[in-house]
Length: 273
Image 1 (cartoon, rainbow, N blue to C red):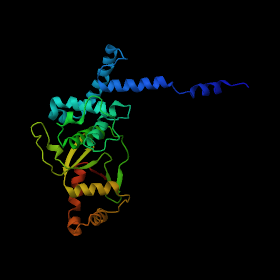
Image 2: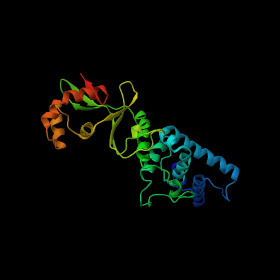
Image 3: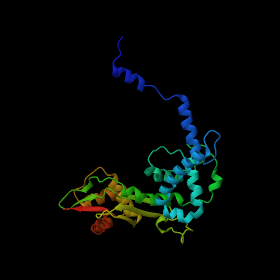
Image 4: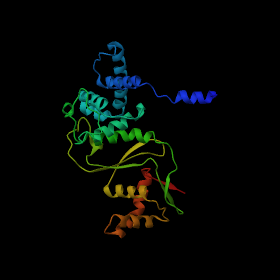
């Protein structure tokens, strides 16, 4: 039987790498994470790769989380090393490391570690210096990078009338249990307190951080999740008030024009004429 060139190539490409190569790749990955010596990998060459990978990863974390880093000071490096060694990051892109670091911090105190790799040289007891508010602070800092890299998309039309409004596509509307926007090196002894914050890209492509109240937070959330396009501000506010069981709809309606004007001035809403 004659085999064509295409069939030969298809047969060759279907072979998987030998098991020994796969095993070496896993061992080398563990070695890079461990930051320790190995009997099978030359120390000088191995150390170059260990430093290269860890320093690159640390560079992204240092740049994205300046407040977290400043507060932890010398302890930020051990925390970065614990993340590097123990957390099962899956993305091959260095630019996505900060997002995975935020996820790592959010699960730092999980009782069930079944989804984690075993620690190689560090244990959780080695990072007991992490304050309770750090996961939320890191998330707040990461939002700046996230918003800055969002692709431009068509704004979502909320009200379609003679005076139409659309929702800024970059709006990130979050409820934090700590006042993360106030935390700094000089103000790091923080008690739990609700904070409602929006991060967005304004009309000049500048990243803005806005503090709002609980009612405005709920309204933005309602607009983001609503599948309806309204014919008037009043119709939208009536539905919103009913969705949260607001006890005085008329009071809410009286505040509508001022609230919409404020949201437009803050670039949360885009007025379309």
